[in-house]
Length: 482
Image (cartoon, rainbow, N blue to C red; front, side):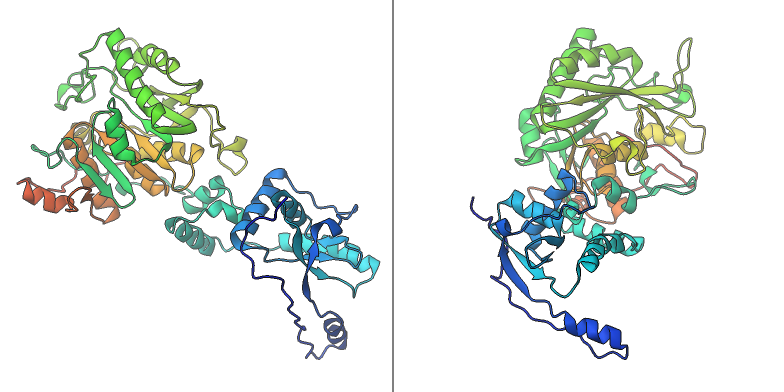
């Protein structure tokens, strides 16, 4: 087997003496006795110690191998004169996995048998006794992600990184800036077919049933995960909140005009395009109410490879309803393809214990500002809920797709979790709302993909009002849109 093409500078012959200028004669003698020289040895000439107590999982060996390919073999293996490994068993196994013929080694010939046995343990154990400065680590990992570096090569798993970057609120916050929803304008800036670039994120004014729109949005890439909230085929005005006091804008489609078969067909068509636009093994979260769960299940079974779960979103307050007032919504979780899906939960391995019962505040909480939020968008979803789902089943810089963006919660949630939000919305007014929301929250400007104009410049060119007023106030708590 040929050696892999990994960064090398050729055989290293570096002789470095440890500084022996110390007042302690014992340390001086020890320093003088050990003058390490890095040399290349054939991998076949080395042998693992039968008394090595350190274990390595296959996952770790693969990580070490990836590290060697990225950084080269920066830490030589410590060996005795007969080739027995003192320290570096993991690197030894990774080198075998990579098919390397030679590896850099340092000969340990100044220690007795008992010292070598102790060093074999100490080399591993002493490193375990160190800690991390979480603030510095957070900065380093966050900046590496921004530079599009594959951070899992550092040995930290995605779930650990997510917890470090966003540990969650320690106390209940009165105001979350991500909750502020821009008021809908009378006339839209966006037109059908417009693609907007929001930093590394994208939003297209397009149809969730049209493959050409997905191609335009994704630009040849595939989604790692989908979180979407399609219309439930319920007429909005008179059925969603406000006891009739708030007039709502109807959805562009599936807003109560379809019968059961038509709605099932609509969902089937949308799901088929989502599956086509997703990676093998991607998970698709799709919200629905209990009355229309049957149609969604029928549509999903006809497209996806597996129904992973049906999740219940439990709200702190009940909405309207006959007989029983509704306090829950459902989220169907599908898998497309046969490849393993991303699993950052791992049964709570990293402290994130997740079940099929999700408890998050909804817009129907009795608080100041809720009527205005309902007017801005009638089917509000909590951003925190979408962020947690994204953390569960995707990796940093992965594409999170939403074909029914509404006012942009999935876009905002993706940005806040260092993923890429690629979202679509048919209604131009809601596209405008999502753009204004992102610009306000992240203090940045969206640009029109074709012309390069900012959103404000396009508004001026098309003679539109680029107002950024919001419907939130200091007491707004948990509402987001999907």
